[in-house]
Amino acid sequence: MWKGFVRDRASVFFTLFFPLFFIIIFGTVFTDQGASKGKVALLGDVSVIRQLPPDAKTALGETIEWKSGLSRDDALEQLRKDDLDGVLEQRGHQLLLKVSNGDQVGAATVQGVLSSVVQTTNVAVTGQQPRYSLQASSVQDESLKAIQYVTPGMIGYGIAVGATFGAATTLVEWRKRRVLRRLRLAPIPTSSVVTSRVAVSLAIALAQLAIFIGVAMLLGLRLTGAWYVAIPLTLTGTLAFLSVGLLCGSIAKTSEAAVGLANLITLPMAFLSGAFIPLEASPGWIQAISKVLPMGWLVEGLKDTMVRGEGPAAALVPMALTLAFAAVLTLVATRFFSWEDD
Image 1 (cartoon, one colour):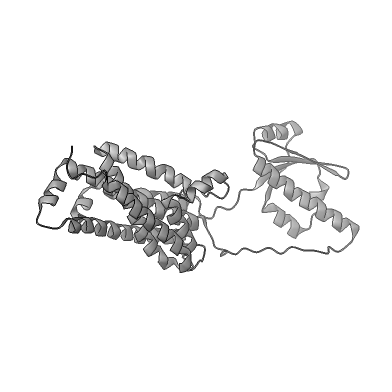
Image 2 (spheres, rainbow, N blue to C red; image 1 turned 45 degrees about the vertical axis):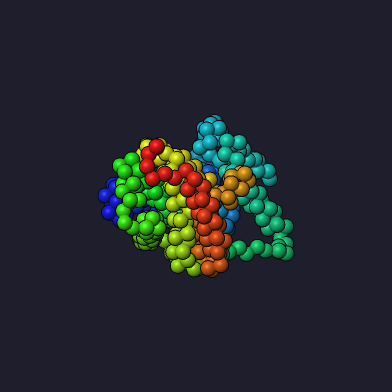
């Protein structure tokens, strides 16, 4: 079983190097990248902004990037093209802000920040001390980087791809070349064949986990909480996607069909499970789908225990769900399984 995996270059590539490529690319591109600033053009002298205290200007500069020296026509044209998030001018005691509907998130951010500036300035002009104040802090480590969120998703995707493609393509090729028939006729029990395949897949998954975490730590990953629970999560996730690969390999008659079916299952699942992109801002129906997908359970469990500081209890539900999924789908796959081509 181990020699069969090592000699299959396609399986090795999709199991190790393909997901690792995403970790390196995403971890490198998004490292130290903060939230994008809103771009606002100042027309003329906007004294409310110019007269802000230095500390207020510094804080405001972390959210808004000011553009000056533009004519009214140039500024409005850039605003229409969404190159700017707003155009601000002052007429007496009135601030006039123009925003674009092309980027409603950026427009709302700029409008909210400037509304806060106006309210704070009005309070300061009255000479009264504010009654209430807000002090905000983050629950995550200040050094939190994008690699913290990329790594669990790519580990989940790598486990899914490795187990699904490895099982599906191997099953089809070995059935086509009559290897399965020889194994069935060999003087060893069928349970030994199945156990050896599962054992090799679990060993490969643990190697994936070690390699992915090692590379991610070089890119800035910091493990928190019960990160060691990623090991049993990886094992249960591998069993779940081995059952997916078993089903694909049992249904497909050719390697091409097995690869296509595996792609049809794993790739959409990666997007719907939050492996590639966060789902917090996605529609409710997408978030609902992610809660019934095995990759969604796996990725969520890895995020909770590796980067969100949760304890081992956070992995219990994902592990139970992936094991139940593996058991049910394996029973379904055995109905379609055959040792030889029809």
